[in-house]
Image 1 (spheres, rainbow, N blue to C red):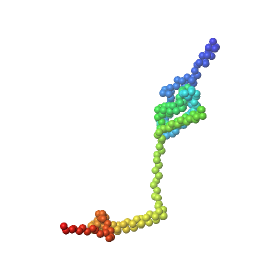
Image 2 (image 1 turned 120 degrees about the vertical axis):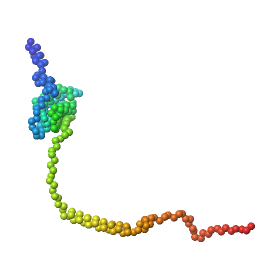
Image 3 (image 1 turned 90 degrees about the vertical axis):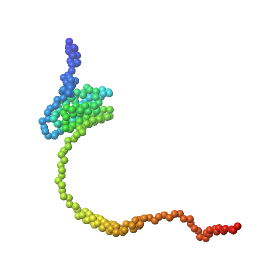
Image 4 (image 1 turned 30 degrees about the vertical axis):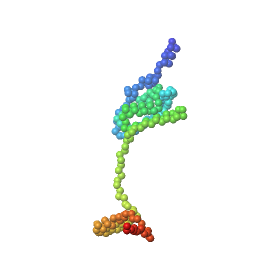
Length: 219
């Protein structure tokens, strides 16, 4: 009779195992109302995360760092602990586990901003860190600086004045030339602009060249 009782005790589940086995994230992940109107950040560290490798079945251990800026709700600490511990007997990869945690918390809490990092212990000479962050970051209001009257240094003022004088001289010279050109009649300008016409090909005549004389004989 005593042996039967010991066997029965060995087969009974502990209360912690029973809670983790029956944990339902939709039902048991408790969230509270956020009563604060200001923006603030919550940081939670979960150093005992464990899951099973989907290929080998070996355990993978990690430390999870959770940061978020709450909107209307915050997660209850015991509930997030049980949810993280519920991965203990699940065959799931590093990437899928962290993405699932992020998706569940984002859907349940609807935070203004959230970031989660899964720092897994090295196994097989491989160290993996999975990091997911919200796309929208809280933007601080831009502070406009008052406009100040900037005084131009004296050497820059001298350079600018000299450049203006040189420009005025070149413009005056160019203007006088254009005026003189405009005074000329349009016919002279057109003839001056025309190019000399090309002459046709002429056979060169050499010195001493004589043409043959044609003599008509009387019959």
